[in-house]
Length: 399
Image 1 (cartoon, helix red, strand yellow):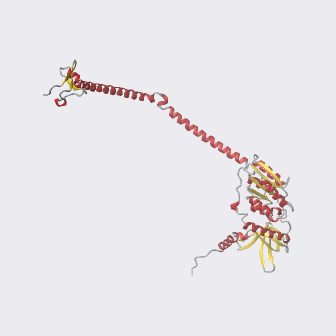
Image 2 (spheres, rainbow, N blue to C red):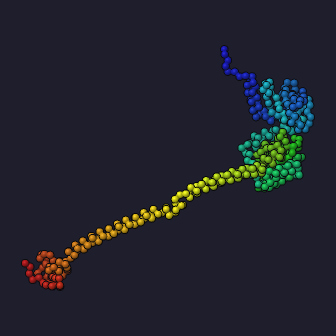
Image 3 (spheres, rainbow, N blue to C red):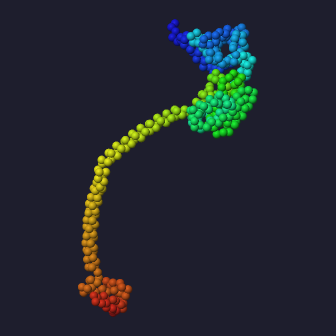
């Protein structure tokens, strides 16, 4: 039977690698065991962690991590290591890549710290959605650092170098020792009372014991509720404390914190100079276009002879005025003729004009014109109007 659905060994090993190295539970994992078969190579140290006679896992710690260990490991040591599972595709084997380790006496403390870390993670204190954005152009930056420490000097130097217009507020605090957690908490609460744009908590590297103060639960919870965007720069790249998980941004060094908190004035100047040049070019191009437009406009007849724009209008107004004058005269003459004709008609109908030709008009006492004998009675007084007077008479009889 022909088999079509198959994968290669390398593909299988790659799938296993992606599965194991992509599993969150296999990253940053603490493992307790006994060192066995410790061997040194140029790149690092290879060894096994064993539990009794039946359980063993291959491990490696590279030199850049080994140099920060607080002791020199050897076969037979009981240790607690922090690392991540990794897979070597070429052989299909997996091992534990160790970043740091402690002797088991100290390892118990690491296990307790891991339990606290899981507790805070479950409560959402490390949730990325809660983290605040670091302002791009801060006006006031606060520093929680050891008094007169190298971290303080490093931060102030680099902030002033990169963004000198920023005001720096320093809140000195103990950064290691029994009283350090309370003092760090005091400094944090004091910093929260200031109108800061960004807050940096920093100290140099050290052993896990030196960094214990930054694993304090009360400090982590206060930092979680802080409304000021916070950058943590505690220890080195391999060191991770609780406030690194809670803070809005974690960097490995105080220098890195200064760079993350501020823009580079030289870059801003370069950007502004580029924008200025671009603006000058745009304005020059715009002015050139406007000059061309003005030149074209100046060639138009209006600008050469402004009167030309309204001479035609004046001629049109003159013609319309003449036409209007003619129309008015014609209408007046027409109306005058009509009035004359009407006047003639009125004159011909005027009773006085008729009487002047030898006729008369008779009215009663009320002034009503009598046109028929039926309209008068015997004995009624009449008025006869002649062209030169009025005759008043009384009706004696009607025929």
